[in-house]
Image (cartoon, rainbow, N blue to C red; front, side, top):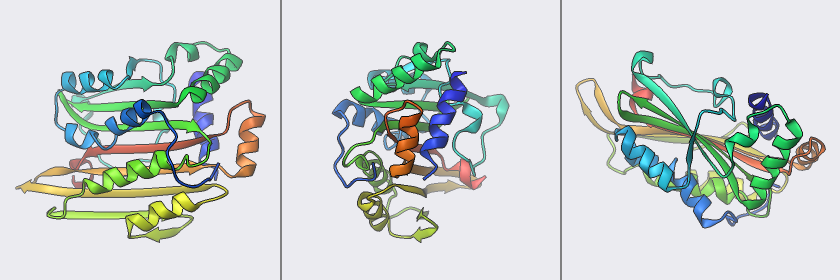
Length: 258
């Protein structure tokens, strides 16, 4: 039941708040989101114990209650590592997963709204190949508010800044309403300027080293949904506080190059 509920949250969010710039999340929430996105790049290849310590220190808790419905998360265009060597661990920030463990939908909606009043909800799916980090995919939700777009644009800026000028190969592109962007600063400016809802997507990668058929580097993708007035009204009709949603994934470059 709870998978269905939270999958509905994501579906409504990505149907189309759009206010202008200025992040209003608590600083600890910003740091938690940065940990599973921008800082995930430097953690690729680190041990499971090291990654877990970093996430727990950032305020995440490990959970086996899948709030978002793993099979229907971000549409992937990447190669996963061999199933026999892969494990996935879920970490949650900003909400008690146990509050979504029963079939009381009203209680779940109330817990969802209560969490958003305090800050953000972040669910991170951490993928290991063997004992090493292969990538992190996360979903972050926050209440609609003026300048809520900074939750996404700050992370977009941080990820883009990690693409080194001297990369062996690199690329970035974004898309908003079927318009393609090749300049990241114009992409985030368009997101910040939206006044009645926007959906956006981007992808970037960098190959930093190559030895034979082995590559080093990273790839990331992002999706942003800021609902328009009609979609906010639908959220409220379902009992939710209007919310924005960011979906981000950072993976080993071999997810793209294999």
